[in-house]
Image 1 (cartoon, each protein chain N blue to C red):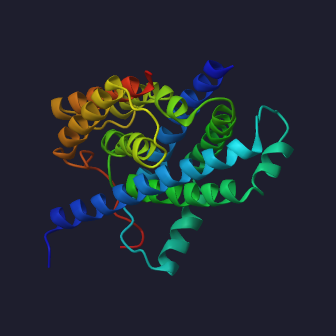
Image 2: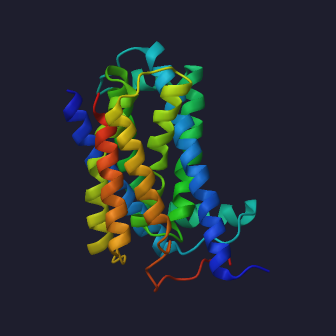
Length: 141
Length: 121
């Protein structure tokens, strides 16, 4: 058996990874889909509903639903001020996907940005995921 | 238009995530990931006004984001919304009463600075 602290840490790492991956993939599919849907600026819901029938948009939205649910689960035990910087590793992945899969130009300023985010994530990763003590135990323990 | 959408996204994201954190804290830690237990979690969360308001705010943010990426590149849209980082951390400290030590503050500022740099060409 692992200690409760270790178990919490492992659970937190796994859910952070799911949150990051579904976020990056979901946004990439959505972006790819929106390029074929075209400009979407409307106060009526109909054009948005029509956009959902685009297969890229549909896959993107499904991944973002998984993102929302795993993000909610993560916040049930971890601090918002922990989850927020940790999941920003998604920005680094967007830059890497842009550079190596889409062959976009990544400027020196952007590489500095990537480095700062990695440093920030490393620092926050060394703090306890939960600092707020008086939480109720889960109903499904 | 780009920056109006960015402002809507930042405000709606902050409201959505802070409300989500509040709602999930009220619910308590999820331990059991079997389908039946997750069903009970879902029905408990469906009765939480924090969670419902949070989903509403995130829907606003999502549709504004969809509009934004239909007129701007993803590599602009994602980093431009980084202002929500600072705003959310302030709410986490004063509203959610999280303990934010120097490591977490420094890390968060590094991340926010890095995200802004990503927005530059």
